[in-house]
Length: 222
Ligand code: C5P
Image (cartoon, rainbow, N blue to C red; front, side, top):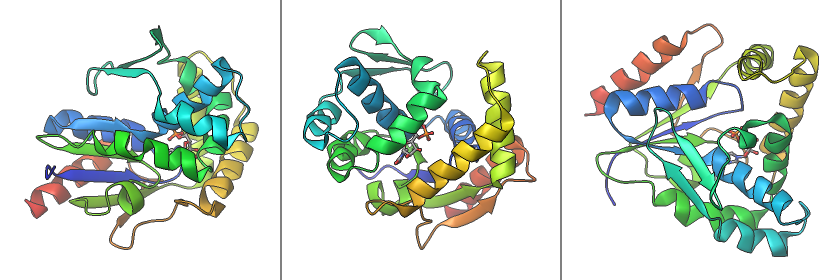
């Protein structure tokens, strides 16, 4: 498949999710939220009583996830085993568990082809940690979005509050720092910018400024 791919990698809370969705909407491209696949694996593990260090059991679980992504971008819904899990995979607890299963090489391998299958005409925006380094090494344009840990904690806080969840800013900051460390230090697909990625610090940029920048950069490549 030779459709163009824009990869958007970076740490949690840098705005990847929102920005990727808006860019995909503007371009009419498909969207891959790869973090959702790790979150779904963590949720499936809870449903099927699989413990998070049992790689032998997690590998087939990840390979055989029964999921359905309804509609690209917009008001996307995710169904797993027939249940709407769009909200339940977004909690901090599932995020934390996702980063634990994401450290297992065979789980990552099991999810690889499913991610590549999202690359379809007219194009794909792929949001994650290793989109530019592992999943789509030949991507058209690779972006690495960052923001200070404090700013990311603040954004996550507002997001959770909006979703009606309780949140505490200091504990979110701690969780973000912990998850950054785990994502950067793991031996498989650690969170690092691809050599040919454009790094963009969004600490002082608005969402629409970042979206515009990405669209302009893509347009320049043609
Ligand atoms: O981006 P999101 O918070 O949904 O991702 C949840 C977790 O899944 C991350 O903390 C990370 O450990 C893992 N992940 C990953 N590779 C990706 C996307 C997410 O390891 N491409």
